[in-house]
Image (cartoon, rainbow, N blue to C red; front, side):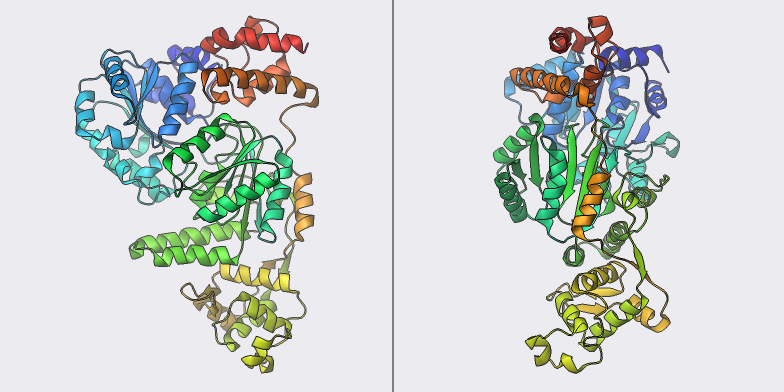
Length: 599
């Protein structure tokens, strides 16, 4: 590692040492090499291109997908004393002209640009005369047709390979399975030997997945652990985001909405409030989130099933970017499975794409239904591994299993004998022998499976049927009204009668109480809590005065370190991680005064 890179790390960013493979990547790119970087969110991907861009001659060009993300990254870099700017179509004419003068005058270390802006012929022509230190493509999974955030404009970035052949190219992402990685390398002409895979584990995130029981009650219990903290609640529909946010406001939360049906000004205003607030809950569809740079998101909840493990990993990964303990919760039911399946079948995608999407959904359902460690199941999907983590719901409260062979035979037989056209609730009523006029009307009170399932209650049968759907033993009529039918694998099961172990659903209250007891401890010691809050207040005052998000001044992790170390001088404060020279000059005295007041 060059002394230059380490000096930049310390003086600009305030850190004494690189983490994981950062040092190897930085040295490789400073030396002129291309690089594909797969690193978990919060792992320090940005440093992998920012430091080489500062160290190498010329200006670093960074392709980023969202204007809001670019604005935050530029603000954070300027706070650290780095000459950074963003080129976008919203710039007034005079600011645009001034920016181009700075670009051609060699006055920038880093220029951020969206792919749509970069690929305009006039922009490419003007950049042709600029000395570029590197080209970094952030959120590179957007380039792949298999990536969950595929954007056609990203696909056209392979034009940069020939146009800037002598400039080091970097592709960076936190989420890419094997097909996605291969496609990125191919399109950007990056050699396999230049791929740096840092793994996918986010040990600070606690994963929990529950069957839908009473979603609002489940969400309310989950949020009790996060009073005064920021988080995201994902919903599948625009209507549900609006209704959930309104309900949360009634419960006393500062809840906002974000979805594609809102006008652009409202979306941007809500995003800015979320980015710059410290206790805001954003209720959103998946239209919100890619590239969110807010490090202090303490929780992410899904009230509906995501589209794939990649989407789940990416969305939950918006929590805890600062490395502090963070919480996630996903709720799902058999209706979610049917709806996601219908989205796939009714899409205009080619058959190959549909097959891939079905496989992705199956993998997600496997994660939801696993009786083992969630983190192990999640990482194994990406070809990574870990020991049982002790920081997920199944590790904290291992689910009870039972021999579900006979129950499965009864359920499949009941579906068959009722004509393979009725929904879950009807099948459960038949199995329990319910006094139901509809059952009598169809004559199903006289079939052999009427009342043969009284050894289980309705909740247990619903859990059994949901697991059979997840295991693809039962199909759901996607075009009709959710009627259940026996899948080919279910017919094989009835013929072969193998042993099938199923999960016993835990009582919702007991499950949540046990989960609460296993929640991670607070990041701030009791004795330092008042000082930490005072430092947060000072940070908020300074952020509002400059109209920037609080975290671009200092992350919570840095404030916790200040509250713990309680430095009394500028020299002592310089040793606190996350405080570089520019921030020490700008903020040192003010924060030392707060600490002195709490001595």
